[in-house]
Structure formats: C-alpha cells, structure tokens
Length: 106
Image (cartoon, rainbow, N blue to C red):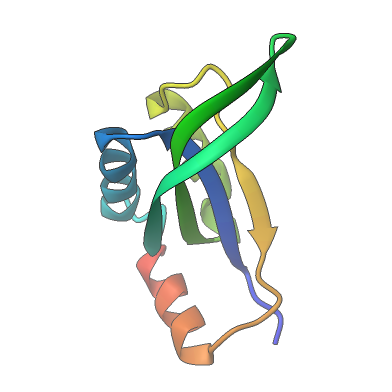
C-alpha cells in the first residue's frame, strides 16, 4: 500500500531542546508523533574539521503535505546553522496507523 507518510530525522544538541521541538511540532500538527532518542553520538565533518558531538535524535512521523511547513518551522527554531532534515518515504504500514497519522497532520 503506497503511503504519503514520511519519517523525518533531525539531530539536536542533547538537553531540553529536543523535547521542546518535539512538543511544538505535534502541537502545531506538523507531526503526528515524534520519538526522542536521547543519547546518540554523531561524527561528521563541519567547516573542514571532524567533529564528535553528543546529540539527541528526533524521529518524526508526518505526511508529505506537511513537509515544507515542518522544514520551515524547524529552521526557525533549531539551534544549528544547518540542521539535519532527512526525509524517508514510508512505502506502507498499518492502515489504521496511516489513517491516524493523516488525521493528526491535517
């Protein structure tokens, strides 16, 4: 079953910002659900240097029609200069869950 459901991954600094962003996305109906993975370690190159940071990961469930608004909302509130905003398509899923996700992001 094809789906308009999308999963968005966003890394944030460890601490209260993750919960604040997650709650704000759900309250604004930009996301149906956000999972917070509180302790991840990220290794990446930024401005010519390899960095290692303690972060949290937001796993956001939303609909394709809310992606542009979600990205704009995140950019306005995220503390990073270039926040991660990686979109994954859901090729299917439980019909009941997908209906709920669609209703919550309407």
